[in-house]
Image (cartoon, rainbow, N blue to C red; front, side, top):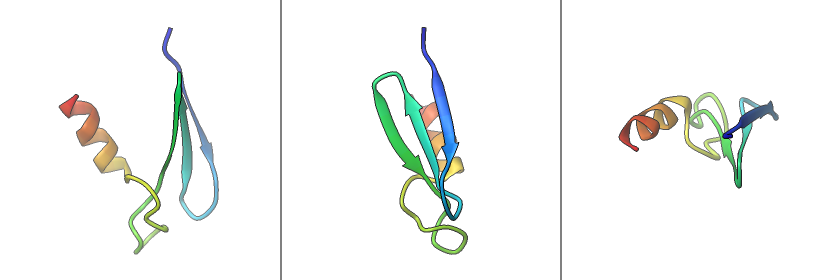
Length: 49
């Protein structure tokens, strides 16, 4: 069974943990730190896969 958890970090960053993987999602530098894909990039990548 697949699972995803999301934990808020600092300055708009989110730690995303799935079964076997973890990464940081973030907003672009104008709103966040740009340390990871933003929500729109995550949505588009999920549709592409």
